[in-house]
Image (cartoon, helix red, strand yellow):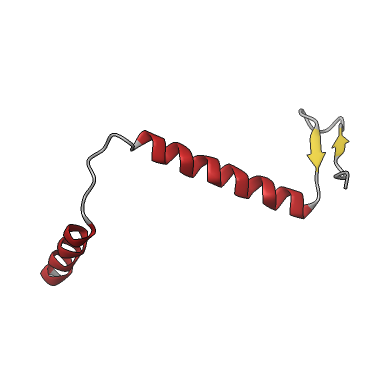
Length: 66
């Protein structure tokens, strides 16, 4: 299936525009979000891990102070 991509160049706009089908746009956005997630994971790869039990304990402690 060939995507129906349209390129538009109008005098009133400085830059050309691209029109793509909604499903293709949504897939593109999802892919970009996945890339952002993988970059975030790589940036934090060397950080110290906190055990889940400690996280739960810290949350309960913060909630009990309110």
